[in-house]
Image (cartoon, rainbow, N blue to C red; front, side):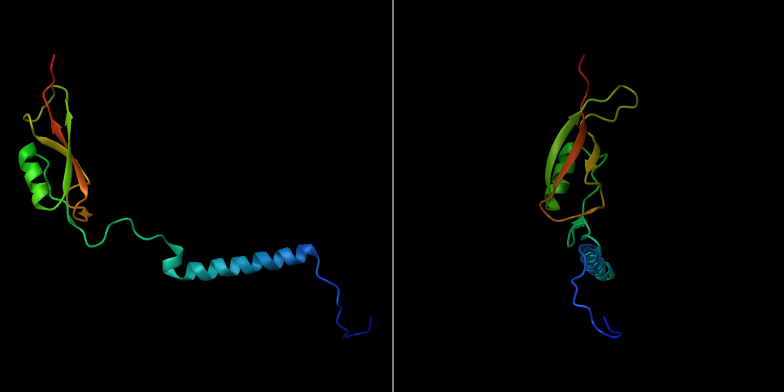
Length: 118
């Protein structure tokens, strides 16, 4: 072959693979430079309102507050031990937490203290 002549031999399979991998890595780098492509959308709902704080209220008052704020609710009763029991019928926890953003219609679970029976 003379000097400056171009060879028409096909590239080896290894060279083709390396070129493909380099192309894919280039696309990945480009995608990571665009914030919308590199990260998933946030899981916090947008346009929601703050979940009202109903811990410490009676179940009836908590249900009214949640309904007035536009939330659905589920009541779960928990029988806790005798050490520092709250008053019967008191909400002892809520999920999602008070103050977190949630769209109207979101189901809020309230846990209400109920007396243990012997």
